[in-house]
Image (cartoon, rainbow, N blue to C red; front, side, top):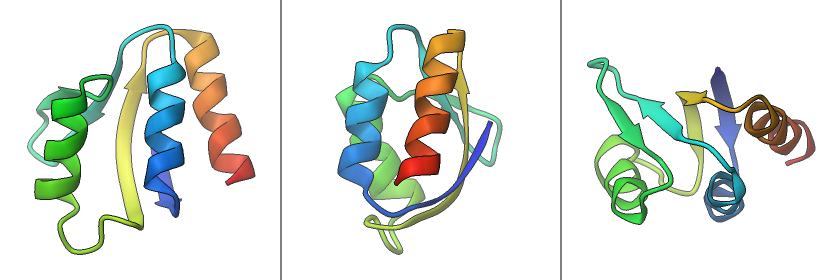
Length: 79
């Protein structure tokens, strides 16, 4: 799932943390980072989105549980 224009990264990662299953970020090189890991969250913000960590323009994530996909979609709609 591609997500765009994440304005509140703190709320986004809280939503990720509340997911029951695995949630991964797919990098431009095709690598997958476990977004439930605090270290991966930090690395994602520091390296991938260093230009503006408070506003993530677009990224691709994979949620393995259907209820987690719905939760992330709800976040994107209501942010």
